[in-house]
Length: 223
Image (cartoon, rainbow, N blue to C red; front, side):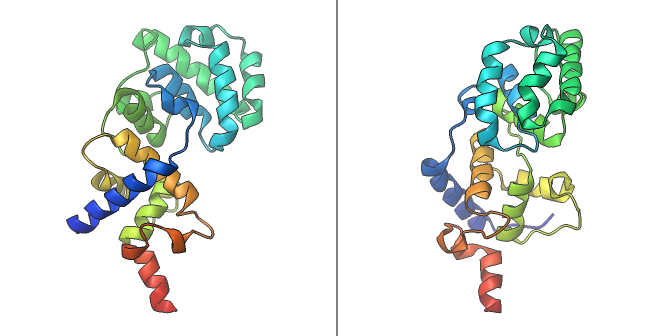
């Protein structure tokens, strides 16, 4: 694993935290620590725009406020509600997960990453997000936004085609995350990647990380 300069790392954390104080987005699933509510949100958010998810999530939770209520709902009804998100094919996996949670965990969302990964439709990012957001565990998440920030700012590189599944980048995300309140840290990075350090046309000129970003230094060197 690449050794990080601790001064640069502390500076990076402080800049991200300061930015998040004014720019963190507000979504309904961010205002709860209910494991069921967070489980539903994370499954809805897979490869989907968060702003599009928000109203559907709220309606979904009003209709199915508990895991038992969702388990008893007709398949076609759930499919119809989630259809605008393009999640029709995932409804069966959602129902299978609910059944497993009922039978194996007495209706309680499992608390460990390993247990969550056994559920249909739950991958590394979703499992770690649930652990962090619902149970306060220090689990750093890795998606394309986080991977992009780490690669650009610290100069991390990997040959993995799917960045969100890269073990070296996950190790980097773990190393960069603070010791406390990792859930808030994860959200800050996700939002920063979505708003500033974007895949196309990143807002480098107004980025608070510009001073020490390796991508910026490389770009300026070329110019």
